[in-house]
Image (cartoon, rainbow, N blue to C red):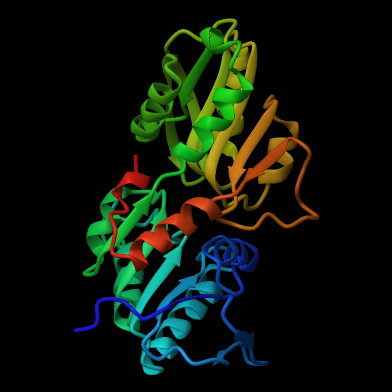
Length: 318
């Protein structure tokens, strides 16, 4: 049985080719020669223009907007590599879409994250490499190995350097109860206190701040979450923190979903700087001055090399 291919090949769909190129450059291989196009009726066509027989293939594709199109690209690419006799296929999914639909919140709800996991496995993927799943239990939805990287180890060094002379006035804030574990990990790495915003959601994409648990008066705040979608949570949280005496508010997240009114809200919010990772492409025409982007390419490249060499990837999780 062949456990890994004889050489590494990195391919990409249309979701994030710049990140895929960055990963390939660090690994030291050329980006694979393939083409993904959309026909006039909306169907997706894939052409693999080099041999992959026996190779260890890594397909880099975030399932970000347009989610369904990028998901189909990923599935068709995996199927093409499987039929071309690739030795092993790893789906590198920096941002895993549909992750928020991970349970039945009410009667007759679908569990779309499980459905997507089944589609990826059925298409022929041998393993998955991803980052900051919205719900960690989604790893169990797959019947293949899942390597789950974290964004916190990339974000904390940036803030450790930025606030090196002022850590005693820094407080990390979780925007809701669901993000406390991530925020606590972040705060522990910086060795600073943790505060929590208590909020309620009357409906989807709407949040109301009820209270702030912790000391934030005259402090510099770092709000952290796994993703920013419409930015309502972050912007309302930032406003509530400022109203309760916070001196400065900074924010960071792994996935820049940034849909709908997100950019306008961020621009008008009392947030001094927003740091995002490049798991999702931010269109140049939409990028605003207060948004700073850090690359995940080095971490994913190291994970790719470790997977190929059958070494432990768990050291990258902590």
